[in-house]
Image 1 (cartoon, rainbow, N blue to C red):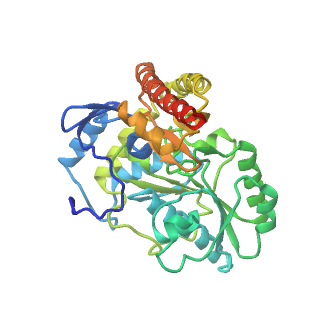
Image 2 (image 1 turned 45 degrees about the vertical axis):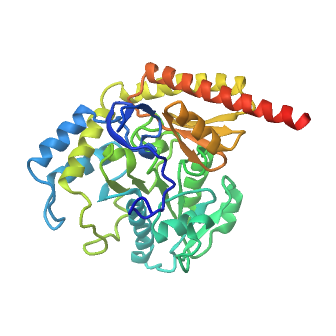
Image 3 (image 1 turned 135 degrees about the vertical axis):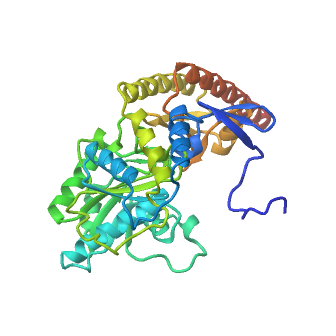
Amino acid sequence: MSSHLLPTYARADLAFERGEGAWLITTNGEHYLDFACGVAVNVLGHAHPKLVAALTEQGQKLWHVSNLFRIPEAERLAARLCQNSFADTVFFANSGAEAMECAIKTARKFHAVNGHPERFRIITFEGAFHGRTLATLAAGGQKKYLEGFGPVAEGFDQLPFGDIELVKKSINDNTAAILIEPVQGEGGVRVVPPQFLKALRQVCDEQGLLLVLDEVQTGVGRTGELFAYQRSGITPDIMALAKALGGGFPIGACLATAEAAKGMTVGTHGSTFGGNPLAMSVGNAVLDVVLSDGFLENVRKISILFKQRLAELKDRYPTVISEVRGEGLLIGLRAVVPQGDLVNGLRAEKLLTVAAGDNVVRLLPPLIAGEAEVTEAIGMIDRACARLAQAQSSLKKDAVA
């Protein structure tokens, strides 16, 4: 054993000592363009001056106080999230999985206080990923993550992605809610069509169900809107956030309407660290930047530019890339070659990316990325694809010979 860390990750042999904007610098001084962003976390890149200032200032005043007392920074962040969304109320946690746990509990409690505790089942969709706790793993339903951990938490019904008639047929007297990611990140950057989200909203309204959105990966600007649901014209009843909200500081949030959250009264839920002043100060600083004039407009502009350049590479290297998909700066390259080969090829060019399902490689640049970073990344992807295409060609020639 070379490390005392529990070996639950296939870690690359890279260690970083600092970051500057979109770049990470290794312990031996090599620069990597970070288009993984801690899996969609570092929304403002690394060492953003506003986040550093917020963390430093708060760190000199107060780190932690129990939720048994008022936390002004949390009250301010909650108010701003509500002002800019559908929500009336917010619970702060420390991660996306915790935010999702709160969302699941909120949906079930809603029906319990309405006199229907039997309505606890939640419809979810194949390919989804909602976290690593036992309940959120059950919600995702992926066998590779569930095997060996005992009985699967009860109450989730996975359905194929995008079949509204099957959704309608699957609703019964025990159904409480429908849970979906507006864009499946881990599942392969699969975008949910707006008409499907609208159909789910209608079904929920007709059947008395709650619509729960997992925006842990898409929330806070990643898709070019503050929240991905805003692209579809619908609003959820409950929504989970994390990742980008802290810009790299651990934070999670469960947002809900007052009606949906009416069962979450004193003592029904809690968190020791959730809503701590450090996380709340950083979260407010993230919103200061993301909500500033022109920020999201620039995300949309850079997204269009990036996807146009990627489409050119797809056409140039059809034996390597088969599709460019995604919304905003949550972009997927569906690979023809094994996705791991493409991830490794890009890393050899010093571009960091993340693998996803459906043989997709995720590109998650920081939302501060500009044309210079896109141009740099395109050059790296071009060179990596050229090598992979050449290798493919050589294999074919060898096979013919």
